[in-house]
Length: 211
Image: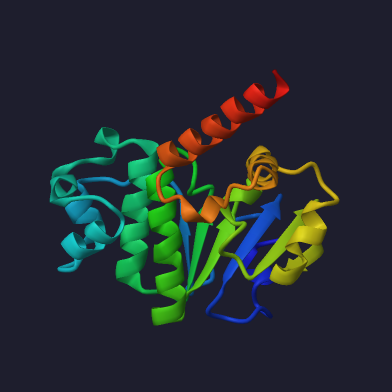
């Protein structure tokens, strides 16, 4: 089953999660599938647009990449360049094929904001293909599970907790639950280092009480 077939009846202008085995190739002209595609020539030649600088900026790359070839780019950079091309082409659907891999924490947060902007301001439909629930937990409207190239379940946003309770929870979800039990409001911490300090202080406090 092709990704285009799954989403032909879905509402446009949302962020969807997709997990399982699926054929990501499609002849549908409304889709851009973001992979580390290795292009010929330079990035500027590949983008072939007067908007190349602004599109690179939107994907956290600078003008120095315009003269680079795909051989000079990492997998993560190739994905970003292909995303920049998708933004220039301005199609209705953007399919992210394990886009979150190789990204830093700060980059992941940036792109989460970008996905929301593309949906809310430009009415794009973002499809995130991944097997990592933590990468789609906060942003997708609906999770679509595929097995043997067939859709076997769809889980709407308001059923995520119920769904995850029936699975082995991702380590990050277990971690968040644990620190909340300790009375730490994780949302109030903007920096990871500050959160880690708070956890360490509670650990010290628990150790003093036990002694």
